[in-house]
Image 1 (cartoon, rainbow, N blue to C red):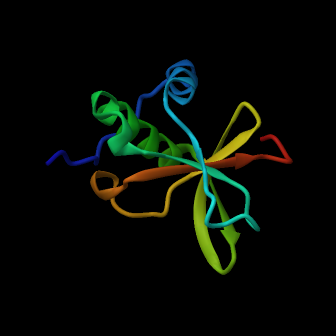
Image 2: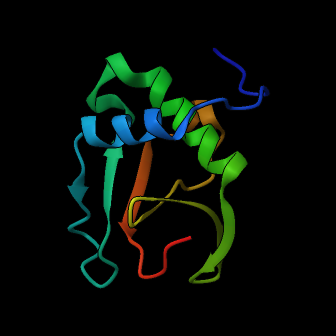
Length: 103
């Protein structure tokens, strides 16, 4: 098991490339809160990049409350990305939604 105590050094172009290279699925169980997600297990060849993006979100994002919970969001190309807050090695998905305000 890898420990993610180090600082993330993922560059924005690598993040954009990762975002474009993975599958995003509409969260059909929550039509009232439109968003998409990608699962780590969908592409096992990109697990290290998935984990690096999760770490980047958490280290470089901003905190915002949503429905009584606080999440860390990171904005890229008109979308905001977030996870559910589990430790990096236990995180299985990354969510995204169109961002009405760009940062």
